[in-house]
Image (cartoon, rainbow, N blue to C red; front, side):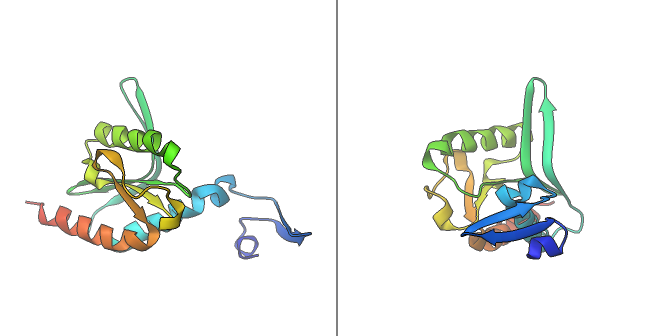
Length: 157
């Protein structure tokens, strides 16, 4: 009903324990777009830099390599990448992590500034990521960002 009241849905009805949605304005919202918005809000809320840009669903091409990242934060001390997953299964971990690592390398972003964000710890079947990437739940994201932004801002000469 809240989604309907803000214009993301035309109508919502519950019938025989099934939820029916009609007129969904943004198909990706329910499947993960909501998480991108929450992460974007957390990033901008914690960002200490006077000048920064946050790009959503950033697509780019370097020579023959094409890539996309859910959120790219550009700051005076470098960039930060955020890939969101509503659920991270162990069998999909290697491909998700490798794509994020490859994207970080293409954008000259250290792997330690590349985050795979899930809604909660229960939404990840894993606890660590390869390549030095960071795994964060929404509850962990604020403290991780504060620490990373502090380290980045203290490295500005």
